[in-house]
Image (cartoon, rainbow, N blue to C red; front, top):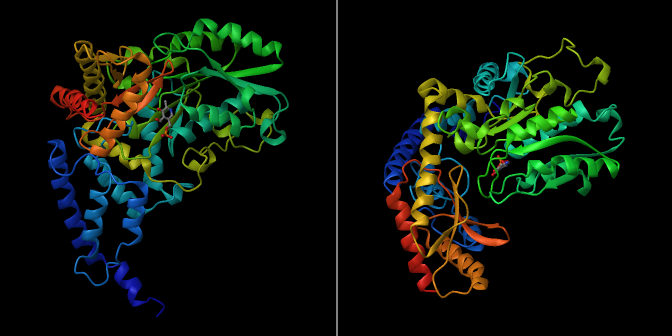
Length: 480
Ligand SMILES: Cc1ncc(COP(=O)(O)O)c(C=O)c1O
């Protein structure tokens, strides 16, 4: 009676079947082309204004026979193409197609996840996924974790747990009673700084420890910075290790950070949003030596572990800590209180409603096991080293530093161009690359100089595309 004709049509299962088959065919064709570097360019550049105008003037589907087909084709065309083997830009993975299928399923099921009955399967899978990772980290049975919406939120949540555990007093109910701070590398992702300010610790609350030549935290300075803060009446409660840092892919010395945290009874948090997945690579796992000493670790599965965005794990060595983060109860009740219900996830997550993220990760584990994580990380980190040695053989290119991960920073430095013009030259090259759309790379600033920055995210990328990129840069530079 209340069901309108329009609603019936919008929910029609048969229309969904037809449109769905058409979309999957379209996406499979698209993938085949992208893997070969054919089909659409990595990015058909349009200015933001042009893009807005295109969509503002987009005609409604009306009564077209398969109404969504044109819209989906246009969405595809107007997006950036992460599966294209010349995509080498930001740290977002080309997702595994099956994981994307799990995403489609979870989008349709729309289980809200806050409480068990609003996501029974996905809540249980979340525990299974977390256990896979806590074991890989080398933690014991007390460890646990959950999925949350991105590395930024996961870092904030982990640091809120740190505050609850180490600030002293009843910080959740009464607020900060002292000046609090954490220590972090000057090269850390900006979201750590943001988390500190959200927690109300202000500028003084984020103590940025200088980095060495390799852009890793100078852990030899931790003690001095710690004592300096104490003398200024600031209580340091945590150290954040970057594993790895965003701009250059450098891993902090987690073992040294762990020793320091133990000595002063501090919370150790590891931002492994990008590089935490290396725990699955026997070849590169050593970069994370010391991670087992952390109290909390963040790993973005949508970065180096091939799930669609956003899918992030926040893991705790002592799983119970996560129940205290948002708990109204007084601290003296902190031991096991009996209401730590692993299956009611909103007790621990910032979000109330969230995606069924576990379905995406579990699908990968179910189909390919953790071996596929090893294959992906190892392939791309090794490709990073290959690219670095290619660059070192080119007299007109300069490698910023030996990469530890799949992030390679370099710049074009042809003979005859004065040092002070190199920043502008490289910025212009990056702009031209963006507008040309055949390759997608980004830029960064290291040691106060502009560098071109590639993150090799696509396992279909080889030396051929990397050589092609260098050739393209030379050509563009000559036209400037
Ligand atoms: C080291 C690091 N931490 C945190 C983040 C933020 O993660 P997200 O984009 O998932 O919020 C990033 C993103 O690039 C990162 O590289």
